[in-house]
Image 1 (spheres, rainbow, N blue to C red):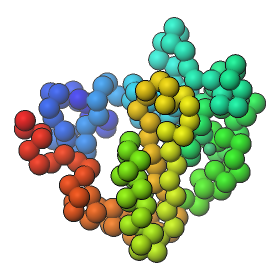
Image 2 (cartoon, helix red, strand yellow):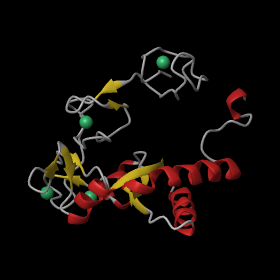
Image 3 (cartoon, rainbow, N blue to C red):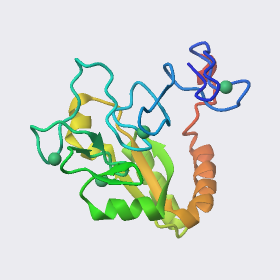
Image 4 (cartoon, protein in one colour):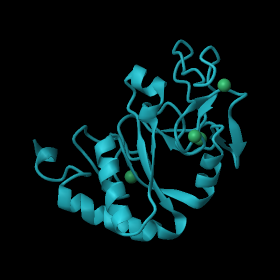
Length: 190
Ligand SMILES: [Zn+2]
Ligand SMILES: [Zn+2]
Ligand SMILES: [Zn+2]
Ligand SMILES: [Zn+2]
């Protein structure tokens, strides 16, 4: 386990950096060669800019979802769809798929919560909508590459920029209630 901020290495059972008080990440932190944001070894695409992160030359990356014989250069930062050079659209140094909506979403919406389970994302969306917040789910599980590879696919719940604070409060309260999110109860000491 490593702290993504100060890069200190911790024991495998540690969860938080004692200096920075932020959650630790698994594996040695690396930084995107394109945008220099923090990334992990398990990422297929940079979460921030969407470029394909090649781990070793031998490892095959995903193919474009529209062109199955063409290698993807990255993934849409909104929906995670793998796209080739021809299909990718770039805006502010980030990669998007051909869906116009995703470009608009990037400008108006922010990620309120990221999970790997559809169920949790749906539950959060339902609660946010109950509170009058227009929530949208973007799911890498929809893309063949992630299902076939058994890669940990992420599900992002996005909300309008103006409602992010309200949304975060609802999510925090909800996770406490459901005992989801951080595994605080007992599991850490098992
Ligand atoms: Zn630290
Ligand atoms: Zn990047
Ligand atoms: Zn997309
Ligand atoms: Zn393509």
